[in-house]
Image (cartoon, rainbow, N blue to C red):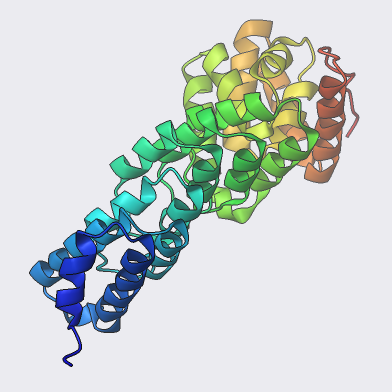
Length: 311
């Protein structure tokens, strides 16, 4: 008796309602594809994709999970199958491709980030690279676990608006706020920090107190209204401490001091004296003072502490 070929079995199984048989054939087709994937032409890849997609729709959840795990790392995996798996309502199926597949476009990721479950969002937050647009969506919709994973993911690009929203969402969570502050201070975030400092400098030079306070608040990890109060404080120490703790350069800090000079009527000598204090102030000391201020905020105190110091 002749043994049916895989092609013949496939024709029978595709029209069958047997979940077990569909799952078995799906695994065998995936084996065949993965074994020689790099050598297949685009037309052959599409053919495999059509077959796997038809089989996967009626296969058992565990068979779809296994398919996702195997295809996620294949560079030329059928795009339609990858997209179908990524959109699966079962996060166990979608997860492997959401974390690892390079076949998904930014549009695909945005659709998923804007519509799927928190488990789907958690998988997205673990991707090696994320654009600012996708990260912004995750920040807007993600729960505590998603935000914590995103903050730890150094490959996630974060926009200025995203930083602001992250600070708002983590303000009452000491653990996440600390994670966010650590990320801001680490070398892996130097590009974002440089962009943030540039925004502080531009806003200060333009005399825009609100924009300056918002940009500096993001870098320092404190609310913008607290920074604005520091900018308007009769004494310069509060601004100098915030600037030093945020790692600002003396050039940017000078722009902040000159912004204050306009508001407070400071003389050129006053500006020079303030910058001299900034240059002598140890960054570790500034960070300790700012951390003390964050604790006061967490306890509900909106007032700035006495930030006077002698150097």
